[in-house]
Image 1 (cartoon, one colour):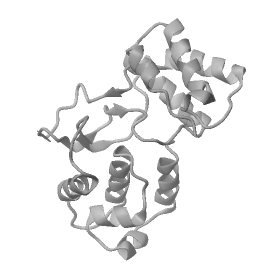
Image 2 (image 1 turned 180 degrees about the vertical axis):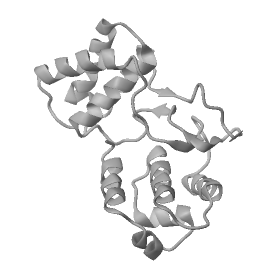
Image 3 (image 1 turned 180 degrees about the horizontal axis):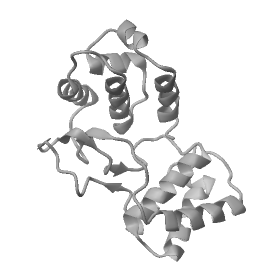
Image 4 (image 1 turned 60 degrees about the vertical axis):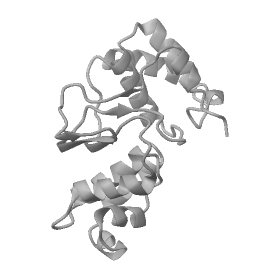
Amino acid sequence: MSHRKIEYLNDNRIIYRRDPINDEPTYSNKYYSYYEDGTHEYYCLFNSASKITTYKSLKWHALVLSYLNRYDIITHAKIIRFICNKNNGFITWQIDEASIANIIQNTFWGGIYAPKNRLRKIIFKEFCPLSFDEKMKIVGKLIGRQKLSKDEIYQAMLDLDHIGKKITWHKVADICDCSIRTIHRNLTKELRKEKIILNEKI
């Protein structure tokens, strides 16, 4: 497995992580920020060891890079071509030149607007020293629960994805403070599909 050459983005001062800039957190401390109503403004690419596995995901990553950096098209093309080179460790397949050119052109102009993004309620700060278990306790406490809902299950899935952990129903149950049987009773086809998508980093 090729090592992801993230240092190339760092050396070129490419932004691939950004906290919300307009939405204000309900509560914030040195470890995390909590948004009671959620925020769509948090972007964090390449947060785990998972690679980009689909064309759809690759296009979304390119849109986010264009949106966050607002650079010229020549720089955009250079960065996207680097990411599209399988040997650099970002994607899992060999992509043809026509597809690369199409992504560069479409995502450069498409990056004028904020790309569609998942709703987040808890954002752990960069270099947060808390362990996985400590983070999950915080997530469970802040999400809370009166009656388990589809949205609560989905939020738990997003929180696992955010800290780079593979999503399992046992982990989701721990966050939601319920049994694995309760999770299975409340699952939908959409949630099962989204679990697969998130684990593949789409």
